Amino acid sequence: MAGSVSSVSDLDGASLLLRSLADARDGPLHRLWTRLPLESHGRIDMRIYPIAGSQDAVHAVVGVTATRHDGRQVVWSVALDTDPSSAEVSGTVEVEAADSSFVEVFAESHQSQGTRQAAAHVRELAERVAETGTAWLR
Image 1 (cartoon, rainbow, N blue to C red):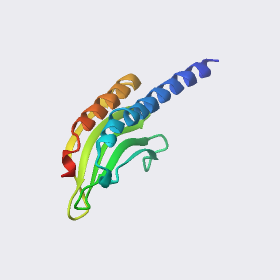
Image 2: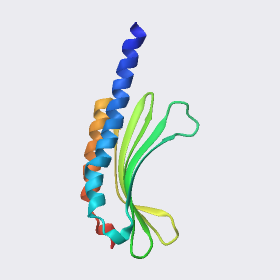
Image 3: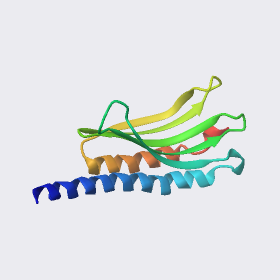
Image 4: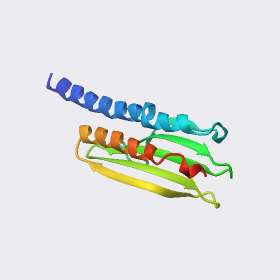
């Protein structure tokens, strides 16, 4: 029975983190997406990837992507990188350069000490990323 208590706690933490990412997507990032000009062909995504070389680490990201009038992409995103002992939340805005690489024009990250703090950082950085607005499309 002791194992089930731990499992419920683990599931609660996973649920809290996934919900914070979903809320970031459906809240501030969705509001940003709705402000994009129609011709930018904006899209909004949520993706989860394993981190290479690790059995337990994942990279989850929610973001908005749009295309500028010159054909270059702009990406607004919030990412959560976790492993069994740590969590890092980062918010970025990246603009595609002429050589197809991406240049960060906004970047902020936080190491989180626990699930609740990581979820709070996701919400905070989603707001900050979305607040940068659509100026990068010019």
